[in-house]
Length: 340
Image (cartoon, rainbow, N blue to C red; front, side, top):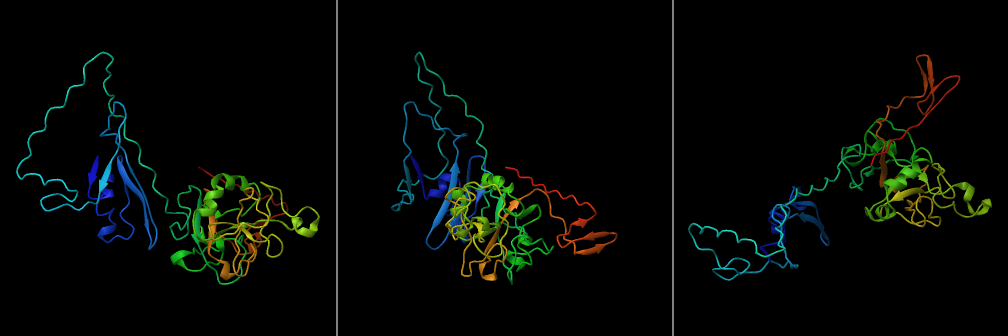
């Protein structure tokens, strides 16, 4: 039987995981034997994740057992909160010697306790330009970063070099909301879709956060619009990049979060489960308006971004509006590294 004054006692904590001592969201901690990775309380919902390993104090059974948990009782005078008599004052008597193992043939002594279980990894808190993580923080290679902008913008606009989002204020480019080594997801080519499908599951995309976080790819392509003669929707698990369309059929960007919507063509990323960003003005990937800006979905690239360069002549080289050096023959390569 586990007897305590509160559920937190069993997990080596107190004062209701710190929440009853003035900390609104408790005091998360981790150790080799017990921990509180998550404590999230609102006015109506409370979510707790706690663990306790009995590697140092194993519970031994011969033919099974039961765990009975009693907490929160109100004791009478002279008893503890759980109703047990108060211990006598003075030194405690010596503990009795341990009982010998039962004799008899076939008896096998209990094995020694094994090594402690490793503590769960801490939740990540980086990925966004302001040094924090706003959503999907359990995902090792995807982050949701809050962002806003003052005029219609292209989700694939190149970084301006001015970090933004969260406490840093509005963005000049959505990519500015992603931290170093992170870029707006689905922002370059169709081959990135395979990595995104591996990094994010349909269920996590749909329910991982109540808000909406947009990528930099439209969910369909004009070649599949109703009057194009190729069918209404692209095929499932499509690998080709749809681009970032500024207007028209299928222009809305792929999106993650409960505020995103399942479109009429839901098969682009996951069959039947692709979601898109739709709001009051139904902003398109290539022209996301200010009232649409809730957040951007940033994916880890492992390569810090290069500073942007203004177009024009720089020394003996000519640089275009994307910062590429133009020569008689221009070779451009793109590389993305994802780790899980």
